[in-house]
Length: 178
Image (cartoon, rainbow, N blue to C red; front, top):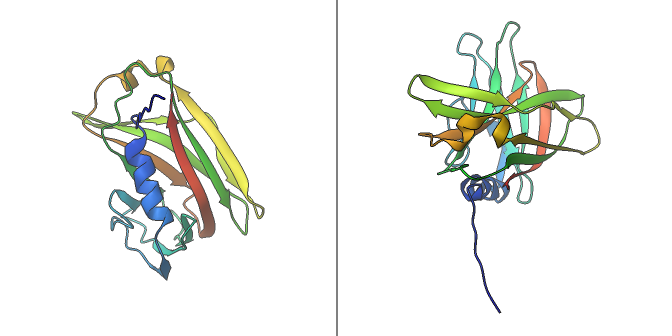
């Protein structure tokens, strides 16, 4: 019998998500920029003080409650990818299960660090969270974005939430690379 252990370029982010899935945290404020677990943090518009309260139960990712003032430009969850080499790969994809008491949307993107700052490549589909759990599946075709196959100093999966007062339950998230 042959045993093979191919961790792949997505191993780092899936390890971070697994650590988040094991977290047991009562609802408490989380300042923007403060890691929930290493490599996982929220970023908000500094000109619009946004309140974020996070609850996490083992087996689920998090329930996030946002208090967002009018005029806020962004609210995003960042998840660092470690050593994510996409050369020779065909797709970078994600699967996310979510729910929300009031329907809301979020836009996933792959952020790649550059010498000038960063470049965002948004997935084609917008994720929608409803009262009932819903599943979102999308992928970026690497040949459509040739710079993804090039080395990068860092990469993050970023989920851009609507900058509005809302609650969302992120139940699960997985990344795959083929």
